Image 1: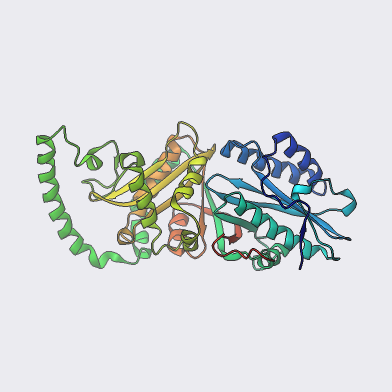
Image 2: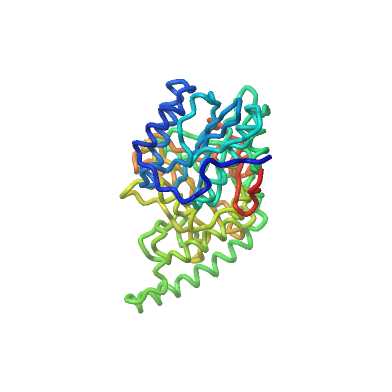
Length: 400
């Protein structure tokens, strides 16, 4: 199919927020007032996160008999998020040469919308996006029913990844304390699902005794060299979750930033939580995305240590106060299935309570059943699910 662009130059100046507002007034006319306000509020939130006057990219596609218009947003961390695509009368299209694609032959609406999505993805990559993401909400009454958007994503060259589940639970300071007190009641259940590692406990106890002896020597060494910082990660301003340094959590700033990025990458290995994304997004951009969700003055990034060795990452946020988010929790493979999730979840919920969050939320891959069982044991309930589609410059077809 031959596509004709009204203006082929990709060197366009950024639009102002007022221009975006005028375009939105036109684009959103087919939407209900509630839907239009919801999407516009989301766009304004992205504006605040990215500190860009207009993070929206858009396209309108027209044929002699039909027209469609769509948009996406370029969020922080080089992540492009699909906004929407709507049919519009040809006679009602605004004059917008730099964002218009003309198809000389007659086309139906589904063809136009697939072309529109393909062009949106192309525009996003031109603006530096590492990933284009489309989340299709799943209607609970019909969880297996695919919407028309699934067909559009497939036709536009996107790749289906998985079903993502958003889980939430209410939290208060008293709830956090009661959860800590009741941990012993759920201990046996949690150890059961975590790959039943009890068979290794005897070896673990022997190892702990050796570690205790080594730690005593290290304490003596620390007192002798109190002005040196070889063991600053063990005795800094962190939180000893299990005692005797078995599991310790510290602000990520206690280690070099490059080490922090390498640690995050190491937690991606053999992960069951959307492992495909490791091939599409750079670690630096992923962290930029997480950073955009942080509330100024609230630090929730932590490095996890296990017996003095870096073992994982925990990224907490209070971006939609009073709702807190567990944005990321990951351990290096050799430190998984050792019962650490109980202490880490307790710490995360205590952090949320200290930040006066009334609810905590997270997203999990439906294929990550061990993680889902942990969250369910801690009172999380699924609220909404999405089918996740992505496109990457590494695999995207430039021709339609």
